[in-house]
Length: 238
Image (cartoon, rainbow, N blue to C red; front, side, top):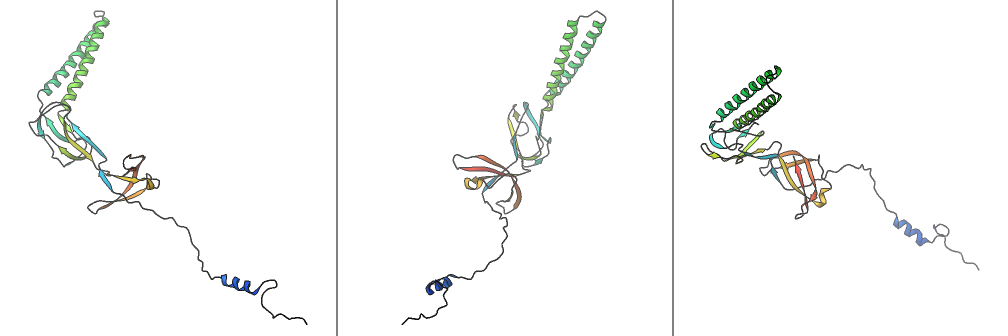
């Protein structure tokens, strides 16, 4: 006789075990649409505030302080008077220099008139012209010396230090105070190597002070050279 096989649902040429394995591998999944959005990354660093400008105030003449007109800690406008030296004859020197220039100009005018009449020589006129130039220089120097008896603020800012008193003798070049410009205020921070590529001038920044106050700022500068000791890059926020 001839044997008859039992019927199956398997496709022709495929064993029933293979069909079972294929069905077992099928899973149900869920999908959803997604849209790429930019993500803001933050870098947190400690920093130190410092003025935008800082300069020492130096005496530009020598003499005794006649009066001090402001106090340390005051905010001053550019050109504001800080202190005055005693005049000590500077006004007389200025008047003498002015009179010397007037005399030299008269002599030059007389020499020029005599030269036109053929009485004076060209050398005399040249000498008179040189005397006018020398007298003008002397007047300029005397005027500058007289102006220097007043110490003035070099720019708008805070008088952070003042170390003179009335009656004190001060020599030319002596540092008598310090001015700070804190508008805008600058915050210096140290940026690690792994973050420096992500920080650039023009980016916004938020500064939180030790008092709890916060201010908005802008990255103004990022150094391209690392500190050899800390291997960090200096940044400035305005």
